[in-house]
Image 1 (tube, one colour):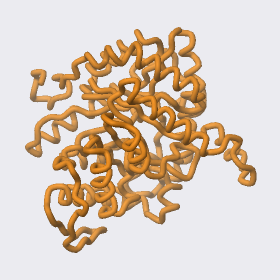
Image 2 (cartoon, rainbow, N blue to C red):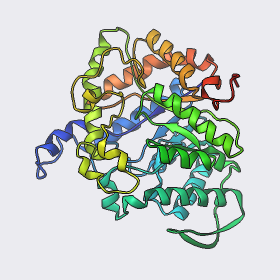
Image 3 (cartoon, one colour):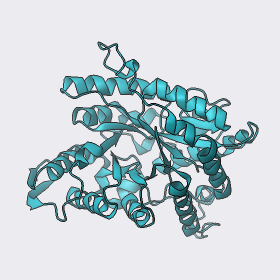
Image 4 (cartoon, rainbow, N blue to C red):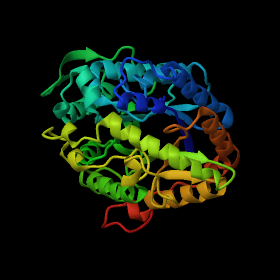
Length: 390
């Protein structure tokens, strides 16, 4: 099984200043230092034997702080030789689709075809949409139309498009990408049923970015493959992002409680999930108005800044000693049939030094074992009328 390293620039401690309404003082720690720490984690990936580097897209708050994930991946394309790349995710509605398709194609050239997982999503945060002047109620339609445009651009020499939002005269993708299979590399993140159905029926495979427990993700995989069968498409496997804290002693793992509570608070504030009014009356986001969102654990207490649950059962968390994490990865693959995983080794207020040590320990004692693991598509992930393992 392939294992990637996810990096994001968190300035989690700065939320305290923002919550206090202190807009005149600078952050106690400069954002550029947090960006440098994230890049330093990325530099560990290839020497330690990881298969890829993945990057999210966020801006405007202390959360995520990666305004263009493809820019970061271009940086690593010039610093590495063999490692692959992925986005977790590009927020499609924030992009003009013609610009997006060219950015993807150019990164494919710069990386010598190593941009292997083109993860896409439609976004959530009101502040991010508002600052770009893009109405959130158009996000699903923008997502749908952009997928159509990506398919045209990656499968035809010339293309045009007439949609509700986008009208593109006949044009050509230049420079053309090096790889000829870019559309098959698309993966879609979804936190709601309509998004999951839209990507599934368009042939885009699922990417689970950590906002639901694996038991729920398992149900979603079966839903995806049921819809794919209805569209005449073969079954597929998801890719999963797992928040990871690998430590040598089980008592060290208890420090993760603080980091998880901070991470879930960060998600609440960055996405506006702490105030249902941020979603009231916004088409396509009705389910968020009554939802408690978490970055990592499926637990409402964590999202409210309270201690995370002990044991982390049934969640997407890989926290503990190497032996514990190996077993949890094995159990989790059995549960939802993922084909590969991406670790998020730094979250909340976790110091860089701890994240780096966690990554190194994982690479020494967990990575060789996981690389030898099979990652099959299990019967539980197939449509209900199919019972045999793939």
